[in-house]
Length: 140
Image (tube, rainbow, N blue to C red; front, side, top):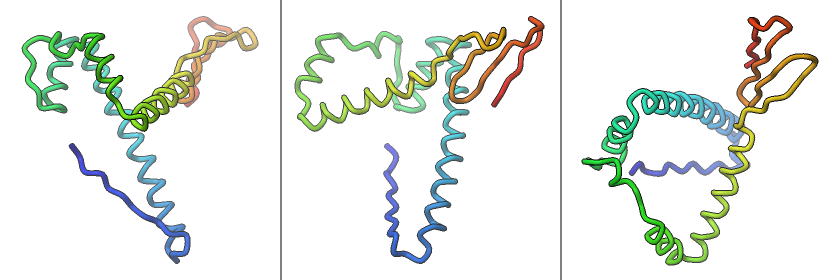
């Protein structure tokens, strides 16, 4: 597992704004790299299916699978694990699940009519069909 790197910034530090801006830029760069990594993984799974999943499990989790079914967990195992969590852990999971649901809600493409155009939108782009059916505009 990767080590957690923690930076403490104090507003009283003379270099506070400079350090904060650096970390914010770094975060944007890392997020952009993350999107590319996730996109590449999804494309690989689309192409290779379960074989890609097995390869990713081996690369990231260091587990060699014989069959993809080895990843499956029964409902009873999941239920027991959840019931044995501490109260703080359950609250943290619930909070994470809610945040993921909210984030995902904004990632879903929305189909709507806009002045005789068809548009698909999400926070990263808008794709709109113009009056000509062959012409689409991509707004990033």
